[in-house]
Structures are given as C-alpha cells and as structure tokens.
Length: 325
Image 1 (cartoon, rainbow, N blue to C red):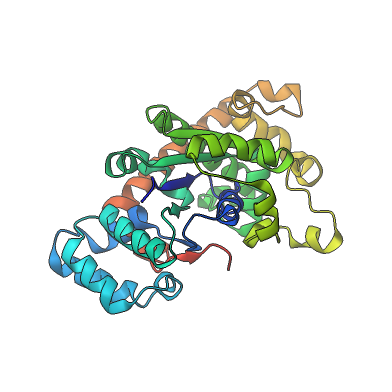
Image 2 (cartoon, rainbow, N blue to C red; image 1 turned 90 degrees about the vertical axis):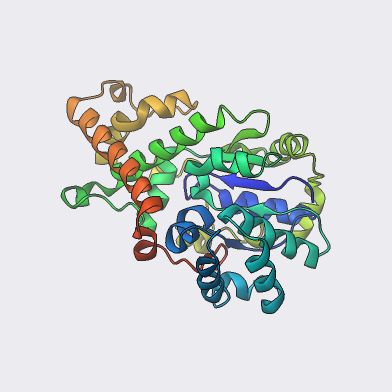
C-alpha cells in the first residue's frame, strides 16, 4: 500500500469536496464514509487489545452503514479484526487496506474532518501518511454550520449561534495548524477558496505533495459526488443558479452580526490572509475576549470528555455518517 491520506479541517470547510476530487482522479479506494475511529469507536468500546471489546465492536460495526457500503465479506473481515487488531489505528488500517485490495487499488483516504485533535496519534501510527488540512474563510464556514444547526451554543448564547460557530472554527483550525507544524514534510495546508477558484493549480500542488497523479481532465470526466453536484447547506442557490460558496458571507451574513463576529475571530481571519469587512473589527472588546476564552476552554473540555467518557455514544452515530448522503 502507498501512504494513506488523511483529509482534515473544520466541518463545512470543503473536506468532502476535496475527497471527491481525489476519488475522481482514480487510484484511491472509494469508501464514502467517515470512520470516526478515534473520536467514536475507541471511546465507546475501550481498549481494542481486549478481546471482548473487539468482539462487541465488530458485532455492532457489521450492522453499521459503514460496513454496508464497504463491499467486504463479514466473516473474513471479522476474523481478521479479531486476530490482528489491537487499536483503533489497527482497525482503520485493516479495514481500509481490505477495501483498497478489494477494489484493486493501492491507496486509501480517511476524510473524517474532526481527526484534527488526533494528528499526533495519526503521525505515530501511520508514519508515512500524508495529511491535508483544508481551511476556509471562517465567515462562510459559520454560515454553513449555523444553517445545518451544528453551532451548538451554550444555553445563554442561543441567539448568538453564528458567533459561536466562528469560535469553533477558530479553535479547531488553530489546533490543526499548531499540531500540523510538527508534522512536516507530511502535512500541507490548502485554502478552499484556492481549490474552487484555481482548481488545476491547487491540484498540481497536491499532486506533488501526495506523489499521486491528479489529472484535472480525468477528474472533470469522472466528477464523483460533490465534484458534479455540490454538497451545500444552501440548496436554494443551486435551484436558482446563484451558487457561490466563496465569499457568500458578503451577501448573506446578517449585517448586525458581522462586526461582532469579526471582533471575535478577526485576528485569526487576518492571520490566515482573509480581509475583514470593517476596520472597527480590529478593536476587540472585553466581552469578546471573555467569550473566546469561555468557548475555547469549553471545546477543550468537550474534546477531553469525548475521548475519556461515553459522551460519543450519546452525541455521535457510531455507525459512521455517509459523506454524500
């Protein structure tokens, strides 16, 4: 097998679009499912070195949506997992290698965006893996997260869900870049905006990094998934012919919330090369600083709880989510 590829990023940043572009290039196993191994399977079932935990996990995984689309034989993959798996990383490798071999290809991709907190673990367990961190303008990400109802503000901030979405974007992107800085040369960052506006050039950059032929003509011809039909939180734009995923915030973001949003995360938007809409956004207020501190601490605590408590079973569908459902 060639080195696997892990696509990470804040949800709604284009991870699925990038995944489908790579699938369209050929040479990768097609398995349009997020495995959620580190955030879900391990916390739920415990130490995979313990036989009874592996047995329980496999009994349930074989009933999951992920297995249903894997193309694998239940008896064969079950026997291999029970014999050779001792960790979540082993499970991921065994399953994905088997899927790739089944499809006569020699490479696979994991596109679970929330693998960001586990980048060091991924580097340790998959030393040759290539990690692609896709980054998108936090204002557009927040609009999409909020439209999906994924902002999940604390009870007293229910009317500020867009702002909360921005704080989550900042937290997860910062964490990804901080951890990624220690993973070079096997880590790369790309902008969603570049992938949309300068697709061929961005794919050429990725092709060099991945050491994989990403022929743009072949990609356009295959047009798998969202390469052909965008996965968007704004389907009305597709129907009206006004689909504009880059810079949507300029026309859609509520005017009364844009300045408070940029005061919260504007410093990081600028650091990433994004231009703010208002010079007043440079003046971060004490309430904004306090809100950032509260939510960044909250996200760290939530991540810890997800890994160290049964929180995953209560909040995530362990059977995995089909990327292009």
